[in-house]
Image (cartoon, rainbow, N blue to C red; front, side):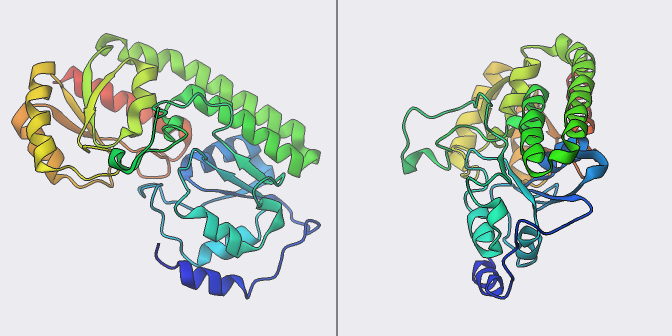
Length: 304
């Protein structure tokens, strides 16, 4: 991973942060923009939230920039997605930060995947399976009901670190959950007419979204998780898509377009770019992300 050596050298220059350091707001660092958005919704005016990953960045492969060390060194709370999503880049950053408040097992370390029923848990593991996560698919936040569970988990972490404002954090989580419940009725109504529609995705990012809203992900452009599309796989995939009448190829904005466009040309399936995290041009906050994706899928399938 780039910059790891520099990160560890700079870490030696940082002071060890003590637990009694005062701050006007609780300093929260989230590994990804979706977790940061939920933390902001829960914490409101009492938290200062920073995201490490950028909105259009692949959360599996975040560049461990040295600037992250100081951010983590000053954090009161660290929220990670868990399920091995950040396993390739977060541990050296936390080690370099020398901040006991966010060490593994510390009260300030919040693992958002706790309490989530993860999909795609492998029965066995070997290198031939590609970049498979042993604990299951870590992209669970594209199901809005999982976001409610994560909000409750974040509340617990914030309350341990800042009991003074615990009631406000609980109120924030209740409002966030109520907003999702209200919007879910609309979202399900929008996608009910296309329930059962077969789609292909680039990576397994949209499994939870598809399960919640009744889409059928029949395959991926990647032959295996984390393995780029190969000519052999695409040659096998195209007739399968034609036979299954696949209407949509869902692709994250950070992916290359050559292979999705090629498959689209051969099958007639439409390529739809959907973000997996908020913070970009399409959606700033979490609920806006889900709303945007639902409406884009509904519009795409209405016209295909």
